[in-house]
Amino acid sequence: MALFRYAVWFCGDALLVCLLVRAWRASLFRRYPHFFGYLISVAGSELLRVYLRAVASERHYQIGYWVSEFLLAIAGFGVTWQIYTTILAPYRGVRRMAHTVLGVLFAVVLAKALVELTTNPIHNLIPTTVELEWNLRFLQALLLLAIAALVVHYAVPIGRNTRAMLVGYGFYIGCMVISLSLRSQLGAAFDATRILLEPLGYLTTLFVWCAGIWSYSRNPVPNILIETDYHRISEQTSRAFGRLRTHVTHSWRP
Image 1 (cartoon, rainbow, N blue to C red):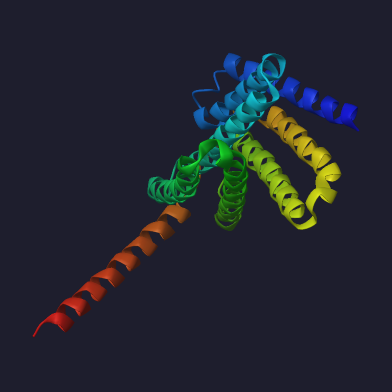
Image 2: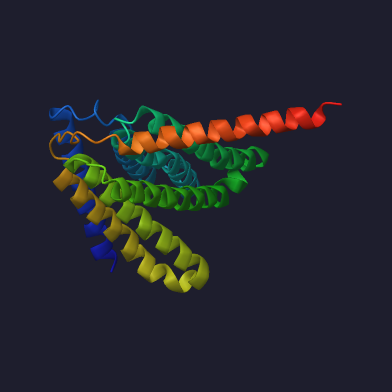
């Protein structure tokens, strides 16, 4: 069992290195900076853990491991940000609104974790990191479902790169949410399954990314239906707030 798990992680790391090298040669970093920033963070955390395992004590290794997990949870949100940015690139109004919503939600979750860490960083590091991972992954699952529904409803055309990001990361987040949910329900009895589910989800995601992001693929030219609906809803909302403001103003006059 342990040998199989290590083999899966080794294959995943090999695919990760291949994807990063290919992205460097194909100049994909500047096209998808948040996405590849996350992959670089994953590679860096792997190297850090190998180094700490070799030279540090068990206590310092555990601290380094959970600090890297905390930072990876934050960096992982960049993939969702990249997916929204890429899909909504032609729709400036919708993209601006989506960025605002994503930024506020991310800030709230991160602020809660940082407040918990300030009281006792070492003691609260592990439970705070676990909670942050759960909150961010559950939040990203909802956000990815929302953007997928938007793509389907408005028939938004997306290229091979964007589709691979959405499908691959959606699959990985789904695996992690299911794993964390079952772990909280079943306890330690689920650990044997969890140590297989998570590496396999990681490996499958990297296969999807390597297949879909090996070379640059531009998104097709979209229609403007989604932007038209956004402006219509914005105008209706503005008029509604205007009527409400007028009503409140008149009601307060003597």
